[in-house]
Length: 151
View 1: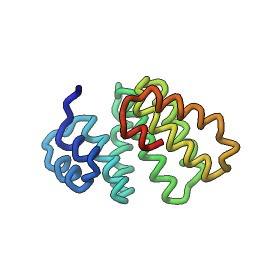
View 2: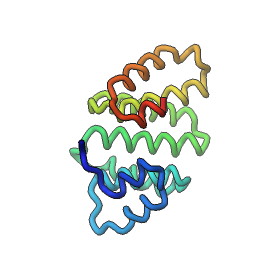
View 3: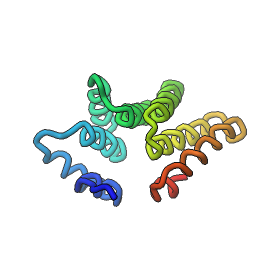
């Protein structure tokens, strides 16, 4: 079992304001903590700040693949909620590709699920059936109960 930071635990428990408070109080946040900050800000509806945080992480050289995929998903959400649907779908597809390349089952599950949801919103369920099978495989590979509940 992996140990989780207090911020990650608060995030998983849905205590977003507590998570944000913990992350804000960190003197030198790690890349993982900065990515989590971007995700929390997006979930709290603070899209401009989320976009700035995620964009800053993406500028980092040599960043690990899962962080890259997660930040790309945050940027996609920012575009989606601004009404920039085409740009958002491109970013959701990029996030899914990056998550596959990172070989992180949980990140891949979440990225593909977001892409499936947005594709269904945009083009209808029938056109996204191949993507649904990818999501099923991704959730099967992921052992995270939260991923299973997401799907």
